[in-house]
Image (cartoon, rainbow, N blue to C red; front, side, top):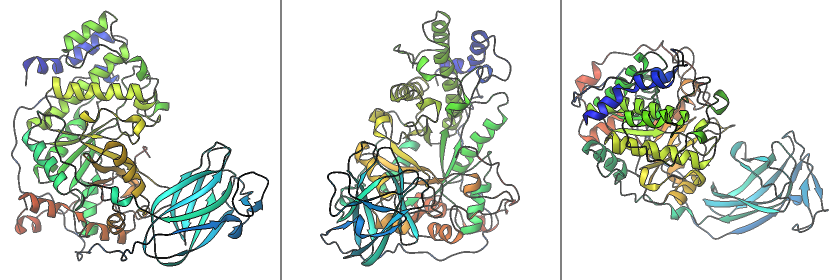
Length: 561
């Protein structure tokens, strides 16, 4: 590591103190950066395991045999079963004898279509809907929620299609319910889906950072080689410990491969940061994969926070056209003192350098990292996306260039979690595209994630791996393979999504049976299988003599979701 870069890290506290004399001791800009450890650790085969309650058999990936047949049935809404809604014919350009309206705004009235499905296969369901405002609509197949979608607000009958819905042969009931507004529903049209075959798993796995280290290259190659063959299991851990990981093992007999965590720029003490860094390193050195997110508390001297409403920070005031990514701390401080970059810009840079110090510690221990900064960049709920796509893209590029060029962090596999084509950053600055999936009204993982997978691949291209960086419930392997939506990996959020206040497994979002079946599915890759495939499988003696974890320690509840 260049000595000037070590000095840049060490000088961060001095820069902050001189530039922000009005800040109190709790202001994060005055914090020093973590100590950079220069030792390189070797990977060990000793596991950190706990005893499972019981073991389970392997579950083969199974789903009904698919028989593709051309079809195109149209079902008029006015001829369906109406629950509270009424037939009308005042509007122009409707089909049949009328349309259905008077749904109300309480989400109680609905239309039930009885459909005759010709064969087991995937279908596209299209609704012809007129609405004067954006209305959320729920679709149920029998007694189970299928999906939710939103209408347009153009006051014209508009075709809204839900792609790739798997239906079984025979008579089925589809119930359509507007949840929060009135609309006019003309008809439902069902056609066989032809777009599933467009999904590809041919990503080459070449890292965008051409100077990436061997450990990062090897990990990316492994992910690419197994893309579409397995879904790699993952779980978020809170507070620098593995209570969630151990709970998964006690419940399913299997550990997840990926330990997800969040790094922060500390306000005062670095103890929590050191603990998180150590936990991420240990998980990798014990044979797993570490993924690190950055939910960034804004560098505001008055009101710091992650969510837009929690902070007064304005990212648009930080944007500059100056080439600052490779400047030393001294050069940056000079630009700030002369007023050539803003307080907001300088604050961002101090935090970026601080985070670089934590990731450098991992690099120096030989740890490759799945690196996910600026999550959910398409929305305005976090400050980094609150001022639009241009500011978000500028910040992403600044982080990428400073980490790869200035700090020479060659251990990062970059995950872009923008979630929308509107927030698409330069494809030369990320390796994996990911989405966060939380759906209301569904306990276990539903079957409606094909659309998300297909949409992301459409705007990122087939050369990028696609993954679920966050979810509220564990994916169902059978439906994922059936729907040709085999994500590279998934990560279930911590807190209530997996664990209750007593440290016991919480079935509110994923039933215990669904969790067991997912982790023991032939379609899922778990830690024991990953170690074996990578040639780092621990011995049987190591596994059986491992200490049992303390099940009584539950993590603090998240306020994120």
